[in-house]
Amino acid sequence: MTVRTGPHERPRRLRTTPALRRLVAQTRLHPAELVLPIFVRDGIAEPQPIGSMPGVVQHTTSSAVRAVRDAVAAGVGGVMVFGVPRAEDKDSSGSVGLRPDGVLNAALRSLRDEVGDQTVLMSDLCLDEFTDHGHCGVLDQAGRVDNDATLEVYAQLAVAQAEAGAHVVGPSGMMDGQVRVVREALDSAGHQDVAVLAYTAKYASGFYGPFREAVASTLVGDRQTYQQDPANRTESLRELRLDLEEGADLVMVKPALPYLDVLSDVAAVADVPVAAYQVSGEYAMIEAAASQGLLDRDRMVMETLTSIRRAGAQVLLTYYATAAARLLGG
Ligand code: PBG
Image (cartoon, rainbow, N blue to C red; front, side, top):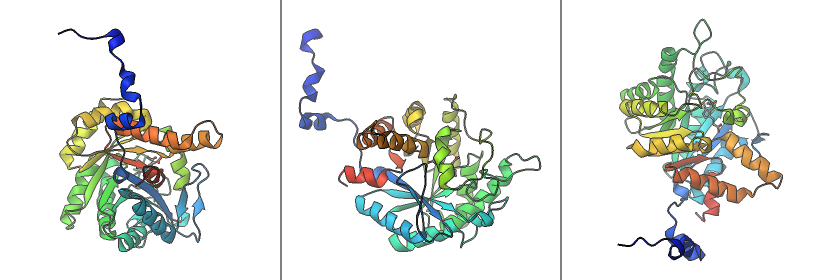
């Protein structure tokens, strides 16, 4: 057989018309794969804009219900809920996260009452929004994040969020063993059907900057003793192995765009659905460039989401979920 090369081989032939390009497109986005993160804040009468995330707000419970209804109407597949308590309700152990009337649990309850099973309700299972020091766990005497003491609180948080109506809990604190304790706690409380979305490869990233404003974080310092070093690649596969052994139903890589290699590695071997989180800083970069007329927002949204999908994510968390679903005609 002669291999035909040179002038005979013309890849451009398949790019000639929109219909041809559509026919051979290898990656498609669908609104059902998109998940909208939302922030619900206690003690506010009106939604509050987040300066570093133009277009994203801290919701009241009722505006959150409206935002979720809009997302559902656009075809978005799920929502990830974060709670922002009043400053005076924060303490060293994040106890407001456990209270049934705490902002996150109350919001989950309202959302489940209002939208039921029409969407997938996910909850952030972490302590940084609830602690007065802003760390994702409780601290030991020396002020270090105490892994095993934190796991005990995560177990209780998981049950509180499941009772409040979460379909999926998302442990995001990067404590060793968190998936196992969350799974065991859910099972022993009769919540066998509540799934665990593990933040499997979560890097200590500058791209979370705007999120800190969104949740009114008090963190001083950083999370480098529990989140991964951006320089490392293979330890994500180790984290994946552990999360799967511990019972993760879905696994996630975060941030998304700067870690497409990691996403691709994880997607190549995971036998559960793989998610990726286009985080607050990724959103802020697109917004900043678009607002100055430097980039076309809609194209950047679609191109970044397509790239994340192409690298292997099956589920995409993005603050653009509703907007992107509308662009996709969902
Ligand atoms: C921890 C958590 C964070 C984000 C999601 N869950 C912050 C952090 O780890 O510092 C960041 C999300 C984003 O930046 O959009 N509860």
